[in-house]
Image 1 (tube, one colour):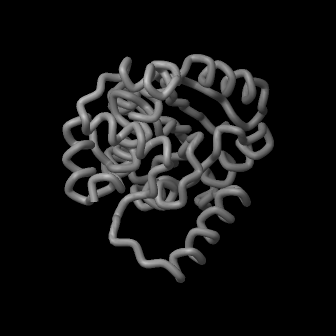
Image 2 (tube, rainbow, N blue to C red; image 1 turned 60 degrees about the horizontal axis):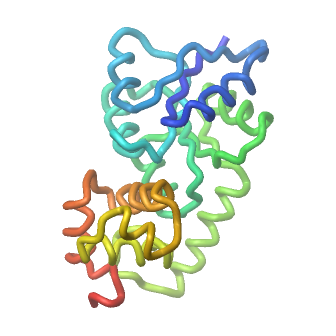
Length: 216
């Protein structure tokens, strides 16, 4: 029986994955956590065979958590979960020790296949994720970038520029006609892409690497 722990800050995702895997003869979802710090703390008392780890979490993102966990427990298998299919982000997660990478729209069969593969010591990337990495490598052959970070979307650039201009989340929400929660999601995605923990680090990195066209 493969023992699985799931970490995601959304309760619906946790419950959905638990229900999805419930009844599988070779897989047992043992514990679920709402944050990476809770997961890391629980690992001190015992650990599973496989962890499904969300990348985009508020207290500590999955990239940082993966690096910490793999340093302490190198044999523990980790599969990244994300709504983001950004080539450089995938590579960074794999570089930090992840054994697999799943998009959150993955179906039951794909999730089970990923768990079985990493448990057997294999790396798992879906065809979709593999195509994204290969496609980006082809683009990189024809383009040289001075930025070490994944490319920000136009919306992320807009929001980052407004954060640099000291706009509050509410002000950004009103000016761009998007919800407060959507702004916060973009903020968190930007921090993940830039590898920073807070707004100060985000602004400092953006200015240092001239990530906003209007500030170049």
